[in-house]
Image 1 (cartoon, chains in turn purple, green):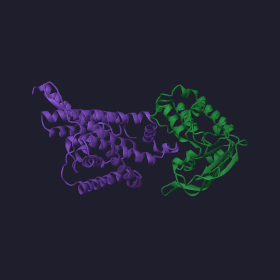
Image 2 (image 1 turned 180 degrees about the vertical axis):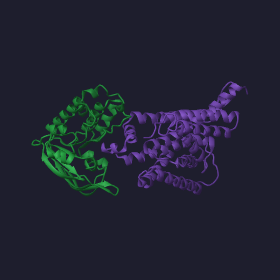
Image 3 (image 1 turned 120 degrees about the vertical axis):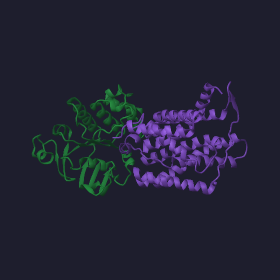
Image 4 (image 1 turned 45 degrees about the vertical axis):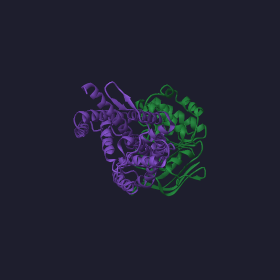
Length: 293
Length: 231
């Protein structure tokens, strides 16, 4: 294949990575931005979404599109419910102290992974794709489902942006993010907002997982890479900045696609890590983040 | 209307309020004065439930509000203008107002009534609030609290760092609210500002009220101010 089409293929692969990464990382960024909680269990919520999608694909009869649609609705709700419960039972009791919540979410990660190992088993399991068609370009054919993943992720991200900017719930979240004490002085139930945001963050990770699992397979340890890449994205973009998260996800996703295709996936990770190091040295608040007071 | 009785409160092991007792009636302006560290701002935070009272009671129209979670307190009709304004700085003027309206499910009629008091805010509804001038920020902080249609308004040093015309506007607003029956607790360090609106002045020292006197009989050079405020 010539260089041009090869580059196009690499960019398309990168776009799929970027879309799923943006979705996953936006959940992490949302939780940090509003709650100031570094959620180490975020990758486990991603994994849980994929594993639950496999269970749904096994239990729901009919065509794969039906079980996929069911999974796309049910999995984020279940994962969000678990996250809200974890918030109420664990994080709230720790008064959202930064150090304590990091340790607590490490514990949560371990519990969720072990639970998945117990109920799901150690093997990677495939989930059928809901769409099975190829888009034939002049140089190569490309999976229609992968492009659907990009469109789906973009739609969900658009919905998140609309919720945050143009709904009453979003206004309450933004006010809580700015000053939780003053928010309370205006009748905002901050505990409820935090539970909702933690659920929403986990739900976004679960949606990303349901979208990607037909391409990747479900496995109880699959949350590690998305967690690492999400941290890379939110550090580069700026913790708590949704716009920064999207830009950084595109940057990391596309560079990952191109470098992995032309060189090696390991080199892509090395370069991403190097970019993080440079950002931490020269702009610790990230490209779009604000300096902490 | 609002009564604090024997309130103890503080931060961790540090006790700031010690047996604090005071009350304010409907349509009354109670000014609270005292030196830094006397516990004035802590008293307002305790009323709002942001600092928990460890002893004593807070009653609003016969309902105890001290056991309530902080977010329930404003729904009973207490508006709060914190020290330093504490606006939601990244939100627009309109969004700050909206937050105030949400607190007790008030509608656009209330918003219009509040904006009539501060017409300059009406011209800046789309502006990010942290970009407003200091005086406009204070207007917004007060407007946001008034959107609750409060029975009691708590103002923590609202004239701090403002120019005379803005101080006059705030004084006029407090006087206008007084005539509508709103009870106001005003924490103030400026003697002239206090005397221009207060019905009574409570002097705080060491976390409790040392003395409460009618404002009408006080002269700006009265010994009370030297003794309790240090001016």
